[in-house]
Structure formats: structure tokens, C-alpha cells
Image (cartoon, rainbow, N blue to C red; front, side, top):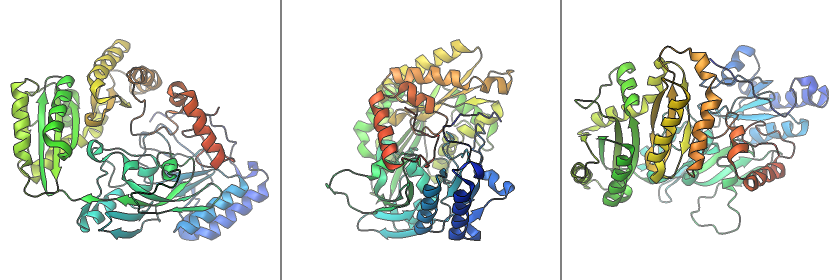
Length: 491
């Protein structure tokens, strides 16, 4: 895998380089005593899973991995690191895609043992969970209570809710329920100096000054460590309708989205765009997936409607919208799922796209967003730009078009050396991000910044906005120990 060395500002964290050896050695001894044998990892072979990330672009190093069992242990670990100026990197399920959890020294703090669901309040539609609970387990606990936690993404079987919140995860249901930050009522956070902020209030109205939880949602662990959260729950869907719709152009997708929203309101739960190359790769490489249409089409959208009312005729409503779309020539064909098995098949097609790209060679990933109305213009301009920059490059565009988030992935030209192609990552990142920001968009829609996109922060963010971020960082973490080298660009 292609690795990337990123220069970071904090010093080499061998034990002898942290102030003096004595304070660091003493701090590490205290930390090991706090977390005990079950919470301490320092053998090189056991550290390795915490030093890499899925795409293989970064490989880190650290003194040890600690796995505290509760919030008090997290606080004790952080206090010791604060006193000895030891960098601390929070680590969840390691499903991030921008290197945000890869250390370059110091200590990795894994939240895996903070895995308890503390409380479910059905009447208040709220659940209090610890940071290490797997997202799929949060979903299952909500379902057991007869409710819904709507955050849903491909890594939900292994990602942890604390990481989801720290990175403000998106996923497929943003068009209806919003991002992760929209699903939180309160937080418990260990601050860089080891103090515990107990903001676990399950209130929907609290007009008493700054809403501090939003400092930590999306902060990527640079301001503190989320140890628990109060999550919003919703009525469980009892009626659904799902269709894969063949369309002629991305402009037709936006026109259809507009009609579905007008006709179905907040029943629209997901609206996903798939390009022809994405479908072709899935049919070619993923066992059991076949094109549901008799002939290929250039673009598709996956439409998913839900309602808490069992008697709602969502299929009839969807059929009516699609019928109108056929008459207006924004719909070419459609397949409507008739049972849960067919629904699962359609979603498997959508969710298998990243995996299906791997056998096609190197893939340069772009996670951008633009205003929904400008998605067609983005796709047209970005496709033309990358094809002009490299002959034979294959655009694999897909994503959450209902909220303007497009994964504009680029597969290597056939016959081109994989490593040589991936070495062009930064050049193509710049091409795509320039176009997205020119259209009023973002260079990172849901994956975050981490290490990978720190230079983009300096290039595209408003200077005043960056200065405010630095002010917050200095105010909360003046020693700079919290996840250094990530997100924040030095001023």
C-alpha cells in the first residue's frame, strides 16, 4: 500500500525526549497502574492494528495503547499525559478514512472498553451510551426498545459511536435525520487537563448560553475525548418503499428528488446516486449481485421511503411519483422492491461499491459536497477536468445526492501502474476540491480532515474561521497534547 509521511509539529515521542525521562517514565507507570493489565498494550505485534488505517496511506507509531474501563480511568490517563506533555490519540473502531486515528508518537487511548448502554428513556426518546458501543449495537438496542437510532453507514458493524460523534459522521439517512451532530442531546467529555465535563442532559430545550457539545462533535478528538452521549431516538419505521430508478442524467436525479420531496415529505429517508461504472464494478466483482435491469443505463438513484404508520401506502406514493417521472422523461425505468429480501439486494448494490472498486486497481477517493442544486454541474465539470488530466481515468461517482454529498472516486486507467497512479492523489484531490469549493461546496463532506486534508484546510477555509478554530484549540488544549497533527492547521 502507498504510505504517506506527514510532517507534524510535535517532537519525537521516544521516552527520553519528553521533557526529561523521569516525568515521562513516571507518567507511563501511573497510567499502567490505572488501567491494569487488561487496559495496557505495548508489545509491538499487538500495537500494530492501532498504527494503520484502512486505506494504508498512513502508518504510525506510539509508546503504548491504553484501554480504560470507565470515564474515571480515562480522566486519570489524560491527567497523567497532561502533566508530562505526552500526546494522546483517541481511537475508536478504526474505520476512519483520513488518518485521524493514526498516531505519530505518544499514547493511543482506545475507547473499546467503554461499551455500556447506560439508559434508554422511551418517553423522552433518548438513550445514554458510552463511546465504545458499536453503532450496530446502538441501533439494535433502540430497536429492542421499539424505537430507531437512524445513523447508518457501511462500517456500522465495527465503528464506535464515540468516533461517529467525534467525526460528525453522515451516512445514508442525512436527508431525513441529519448528520451525527443532529442526533445528540448531551455529551460527557474528558477535557485535555483531565477534568470531566458532564453534559449528559437529555433536554431538547436549554437556552442557557453556549451549546458546548458542538465544540466536540466533529472535533476529531483535538479538544477532548467523548466518553458518553445522550442520543436522540425516533419512531420505528413500520411502512417502507424502496426502488432503484434508472435515469438519463444527474440533472434528472435532482428533478426526481424535488418531486419525491414534494409528494412524500419527510417519508424520504435516503436518496442515493449510482453511476454506471459503479454498478458495472459491483456486478463484475461482488458475488450474488446482478443488474436488475434488462439493459444498462448511465445513472441510477436508490430511493427509500419510511413511515412510522403501518398503514401508509408508500409504495403507491412512490409509484405515482415515478409514473409522473416517466411522463416527464426524467425516469427511464424503475424496479420497486416487493419484499424485505429485495430491499436488502438493492441496498447491497449501493453499499458494495467501495469494495467492488478494489479489484479494478488503485482508487483515488474524493468526499465532497455541493448545494444539491449544483450536483449536476459539479459532476460535469469534475469529470471533464480529471479526464483531461489523465487519459483513460475512470470516474466512479456515487453517494448521498439527497444531501449534496458525492463520493467522486477515480479508478486507475487500465494498464497503468497502481502505485504510479496513487502517487497522483494530491493532484487529483486539488482538481476536484477546487471545483467543489468554487460551487460553494466543501472538500470534505463526511469523512473529516484528519491528517489527509489538513493542507486543504489552509487552502480553502476562511482565515477568520481558521483563527477561531485555533483560538478554541489553544484555550482548551494549550499544551497541544490532544490528537496533535490532525484537523487544526498551525497559524
